[in-house]
Figure (cartoon, rainbow, N blue to C red):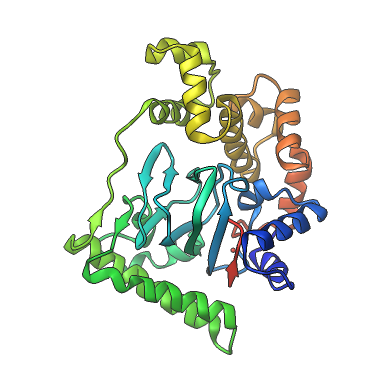
Length: 328
């Protein structure tokens, strides 16, 4: 599903409120789209750059996901939420900028009830576009920016970055003549500013939160998901009881340990399938005991079989996947 398809839904006569978002989610379900997996499924509409404003009113519709493109996130309203990128966890403030490389799993860690909506501006940039820019950016090529720690701009000279993110959102929303060029130019300006930020160190890099048990477990999963992982193994590895691991993980992440491991394996599986690897091999490479287990998990999570997913990719071979969208 492309971002423009979601935009069309957002243009329906649905209020931009928590109640309106629920109506939109129900509309997606009626179309056979599972809102919990929407962000794993979304594709860019442009082969270069897409940008939009995203608003979340509750924590129920965002699962662990990754993209084939790079992602920049500017936090407008965060309500003190935390964000997981790979195995690192960050506590966010308004004005923070997040960098998510292609293929890296991520998700916000939202409280069960948000005191205020989680609002952010999002830029999606295709890897091909970034690679084509490598010759004109120095000292760090654009794709390298996405390996950096999140950035805190509030109270610094770079606080105006928020205006640039907003400019891009407005251009793509209005779609006036020349808007594609304007969005690309605006994104290049943001990337050049970020180069200066990290060269001059005038904005603060956000340190990952001090590791708790759940962080250590997610880091272990990130490195070992292709192997057999049991709660008993984790209990022995971290010298804590199985019940402590299960309880703390569910409390922090909002889902069971085994569900998280399965989601992480399936994210990796999609990347392997897109690369053309045989399906039986994919199931083994990402940690499933056998193909039938992999098949059932994939079908339950995404509503289609691995083979059907491969056929969809063959029909639409471009890996590049991307207004104001009140969903994420």
